Image (cartoon, rainbow, N blue to C red; front, side):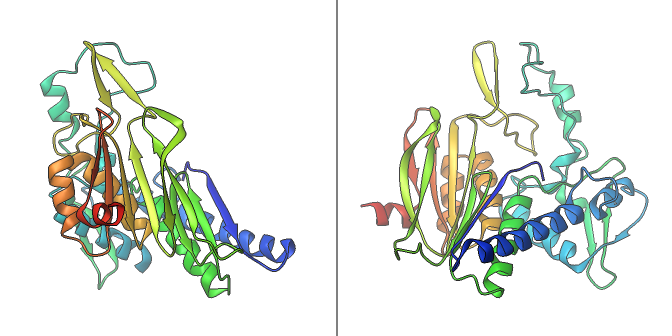
Length: 299
């Protein structure tokens, strides 16, 4: 999935731990082969090839993942959208983009094929159909978290009492460390990604962070992040990072991106309506904003 996975398990000896980790690696590969839009023989690649032509039969697991993604799209008013993969890449964050703003026409055209409302699921027939020709779906904002959740469930089923999975910064934990202390997770400082500005105890929870400190572009002295609003085609401004804590790595992964796009006020309002979900936002002025539940815990 283009991401690094670090898997830690608590076991009686190293040999047993290695066996658990090998099973975890196999599960990650299985999921990648199932949902990767970069693998031409995956079910998702076939769904994308058949956009505008006809439905594609997929595994029930894929139907269920897409269904949950569509639910998040609905509650975020499209701030989260797996058809984001349809976007034309007019913004480039690898240093190759010249310092000129793309035209409004180009930006509008870049998002013309995006729209979760045009993803049609038939749960009885177990098919997915993308209504617009040229539409694509991808799981870049939810796939890592989903894989982490599946690996955690597999290891628990195998009898692993405690562990932590780090999917390129999206973490999920269960149990406690061998000394019975809680797992501690650091929140990256947006001004210096090699340092942490906060540490949180994490037991049987997951955390995911979206940040603009990895990729950005400066046009006319204005900084734009690589996180783009799929509804408008414009990069999001005003936020440096969003961290979401919940009981699911998949949910945390998706909501971190969603809140980044929604902005501070609307993002925190959304999180405050959800049970057992907490949020920390760092704005572009390096000021911290907490959801109600997390703020009450920190006071």
